[in-house]
Length: 375
Image 1 (cartoon, helix red, strand yellow):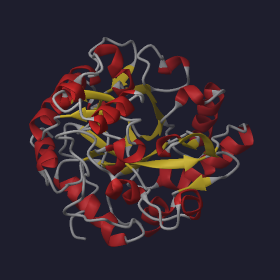
Image 2 (spheres, rainbow, N blue to C red):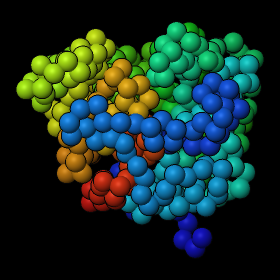
Image 3 (cartoon, rainbow, N blue to C red):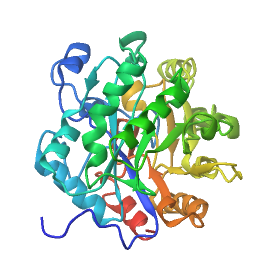
């Protein structure tokens, strides 16, 4: 491929983008949602729920890709590198007792050593349910925490990745991200074992970052090195829900029975609509923490392709507003030690959450261009 994609020696800020692997069919999804289901299935069926609601989000440059195709993974890495992103944080699914899902794309990246682009792993330790597909009480696969033997097997499964020269490190230690640390009942035992196994296997340790929506959750008391504070779920605390947003847009039509019924349907469900411009003021927390905190930035959020009216929607996102959001995050880490100047990008390709840096038909590469100007 010529120049390695793995050289970040000249970068001041380490921008790491979360990477969703659900873009190829697996037997489990075939069984639950119908043969051939992938994330694109939700994306392409999305409809606008109100006037000026931007849906569907459709890909441009990279198309409706299949992550089993090596050329797709190479194209993604080349694009990310060209716009200043250091690497991908691949979501990794280990449900306990050796059960894995959606591991093929990363396994092939690891085995083929291509693309030569930095990566780390984020453990998405959540049960899968039908909540985003109209079946909230249906547990598809449960996340379990069987204990020491399973934790050891989990570590051993990750060891080859941790030792890969492409693996993202902080202070010489492989970065391991945990999505739901509060759900691990014995998190101190889990992290302590992982650290011991890392040293035993000639690594310098592990640098464990915990994702949380709770600014009072202290990582140092829970076996972790730092938090990545995801405030999206707390927006309702800071901003009033735009309960009259649709009413204002359609008040002259509400006398029509069908429109009135639609309004009633919408507000009988917990749809939440906020302005992106307002939301980003709160998504980067400027509190002085007693521990290391890494900010997370989002180009947009709209999970209505998955959940319809049972969704959280940010409206009015633009590349320029995203740029201001990134600036806010950079201000947090500007005085961190060089290796720890990290911001997380949520996400590279969460298309069914309207949450992607990959180019779409409306904005093209503009979000990536805004990012590149700052990195």
